[in-house]
Image (cartoon, rainbow, N blue to C red; front, side, top):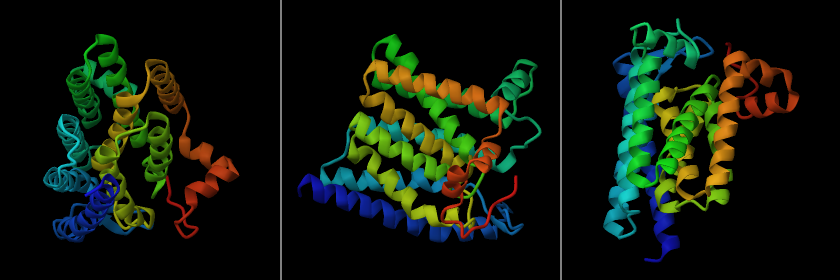
Length: 278
């Protein structure tokens, strides 16, 4: 089987597997009341992003059987996104919103109180360093790449405030990084296919992927940047991520989007003209 056929089969397997998992997972979460009100006030399943690592497990197994498995990089990637999704799942289930912003969670951590946001920050940082140390050798690469992975993870989380917004941001950044970094399709295409399968559920506010999913999307973008880009470009992305985080500590992305007609149009695209409240 040639590479194109293998890629097509892997993408198709990911898309179909994600839909199959969603069929059971959405009903399972609803039955066990793992739900929260959507912007219409209707209770919908949350933390559905745990489906992404599950899909990757299945697809990488298929790729292994076909002899196109990406190798050691896939093992590191799968372990990292599973861990980062678990941290998000904990926050989705028991997290509160009485502490907001990265600085707020870190401040509480230094006062001896561990919030779910603080757990995500510390745990996510450890996972980013772990993945970076396994994939890269020099301390400069390990440090820069860990920061890029951790900050990309949080960036997508910051976007996940409206139906479909985080996935739209992920898709735009995925395309940019894929062409700029010439990323390994066998490694990253399965997640893209899974996200596209899930996208309509999120866009129509029928399910929330939560941090369980946004963490996976953000970490993937960070890894795409880290694995193939030269240091100057990685430093450029790192600078962008730092500025974006500092900006969002002071200003509301939602308010900025609402004030810009083009951004508001893109943000609402696909939702049927309805918007979610803050």
